[in-house]
Length: 119
Image (cartoon, helix red, strand yellow):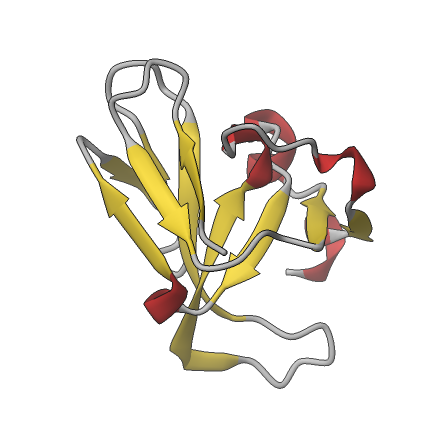
């Protein structure tokens, strides 16, 4: 079952192949300021349309946001691993589940990640 989401103004839209069952709450300097709650998908299970801008401080993580309202809709990042076995040539899509249409994230299993100290 696909589920869609939009930024606040509705200009940027995205869709994922399945309803998320878990999410990651990261406390890195970016995620804590952006307020994201991330569900991860393979690139083939994601699509986006509408205007979009990209911010990347390091070049690895690419944060996509709406140029009109500023909501960060999704991110593209390498397959980071907590054990250090990163796959920098493979990517995943992190979708901000707070932007999914008609979806209540309160039932998700949430993993807290200490991104502020891991990277």
